[in-house]
Length: 393
Image (cartoon, rainbow, N blue to C red; front, side):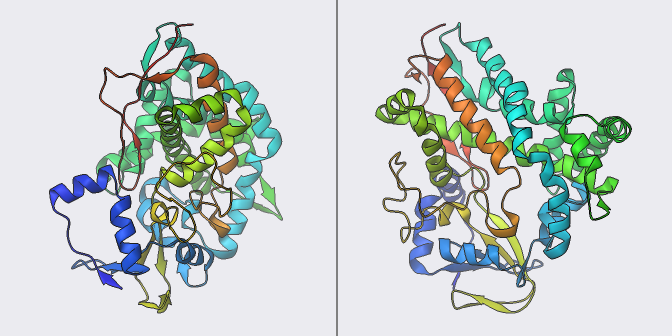
């Protein structure tokens, strides 16, 4: 196990731009490294795919409750912070809302109309920046639509969700926005309790299994989590996918001609540039990872972005390859009991989004007069700008 040193500002900038070379060096030195900071529990980072998968599966040794400790003050009780039977009961109660029939209805009534409405605004122009105008707005509008948020309040609600997600960095704003979100959602939740409809919140508030139902803390915790978990991650992956295609014009034309390749392009992007690069647990007892000792109370971070580039599993792992075999799978949606609850909604939004962009923006290409777009970030990665040209329609 290697010890981690502090980064210089130039090294930090390079890491934000492209952390993968550094992660490769760490994988070559050993399976994990350790970060020690005075006043904080030791942190162990896991860089190889097999080790990351093993930790994510081992709920007896590694607990997800650290997520409740960090986000609970701002979100309330969250699924991400539960273990064992408690997690199973909670997940079963909310998973019904994401059933196949609901996804099919959402695609027709909400997801597809949302992306086409955004594309309507840019299609006649022949140029756009897809991140601020399309990709960053699309999943936000879908999630707020599922929650019954008025279209006039979407931006305000999204801002609250961003503050809640960043609560540990700015507690005052996080707590204020958490309170505002609950006040906004309370009349919607109370109405659905009395007058259930065929929608997501009705499914959540009326769900019952073996006499178990969600109390208000669980309901509002789930709703506060839904926006950052479902919107930010999806919009970044959509931007990453479009950029991968735009940087590979031959692949773009193949996907445009054969739409069965859309899902393959999305899955390869999830592996190549996942939007969320790490997942955190805490060791419940003294243990080891790949032969390296880990003490009870240590924070254990699975570096998912690194695991998805593990050269022992993925040939030419730093390359985006439309023809990459589907096995082994990436870890971008997690693994085991904590596999992302919204995995099917995310894939639906990505598939519908990519297809709509290809349908509505013929001749799509990067704008050579603008700075070349970059995927940036460490914990969350995606392009901040995606300037393109296309044939007006």
